[in-house]
Image (cartoon, rainbow, N blue to C red):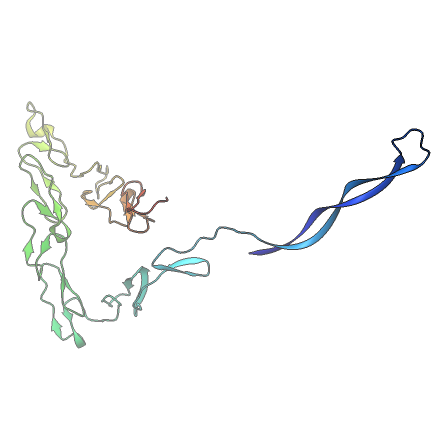
Length: 266
């Protein structure tokens, strides 16, 4: 931006003066010259700079605030994050334009949803979105032993023959074992009575005194702390938004960005 400033300058000029001549027998005065400087002022225009923040990709600025932008209008809802609508009650679909219930899809909601085990149809395509613990075209297949969670993508970590809950990944301890992964054996002298109340929390999570979901450490979420934070979240309960750009990986614990090749910066 441009600013107008008054500037001062030192301008040199020649200033004559008289003094006794070098010859002591002379009665004449000799003229000498010396350089002097005069201060002058003039008004000039200068260009100065300041830092200005701008919105991240997927957001636009509105009244000084960065607002998420959705390519498709959220007809009956609001844009929650870039290209992700949050629909009003009784409205569904990627753009919240369908009023079909979870049991129907298609034009005029004429097609019956074939999804099983609590799966939901996409109101436009009929494609099933399966709940944790199930997979398949119509969510007909429970997770195979040793897997759990959304899309059965989680790998069970249970030890000592414990069974793994296909939905949450919680371990069902057997044979006198205890711990989130059933990794500890109860005291042999006291038998299973020495085990005490079970705590199913995994990955460093802890049980609350009054019961309820586990208290998960940074980087983990879920009923028993078996779900890692999504790629754009970090911190305790994955409650903080990552701000990494240009393909960088966000540390799920601290939120620190690991830059992709060719980029640097915080």
